[in-house]
Length: 183
Image (cartoon, rainbow, N blue to C red; front, side, top):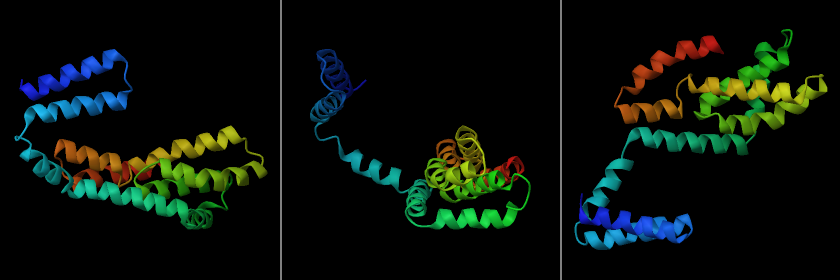
């Protein structure tokens, strides 16, 4: 093991044993390792550049941006109205509207958290007026938002493809049919 790594680990353990806050422990340990390494830090800039110069990570950033745009704008309400036009007239239609809206929105954002935060304030009051319990509607919406991970594009699938060095297109083609069947 290199001397810089050994120094960083020893300083990390020492500051941790002293009871310093965790942020300071990481900072002091890292700085001590950097000082011991000295001039051999040239690799850091190229490693940083090559790690962020990856189209998969760029897609993750754009999904997060899309989720924040959807939660700020009225797009979630439009998706609910579109879902209501599709399945609103069926018996239990408003619950199905919630399921369809969460699947669409989680497929658009690639994540379930923006979906839940955008749709629960929209749908739970409407469903409570029709007599559904709050716990039931929240459980339905939260559980159906995870179906969006199976419908491409999704952030966990992109991260898996990046780590496992697999084809993004092949994974997306393999998950779209099961995701739609489960929805």
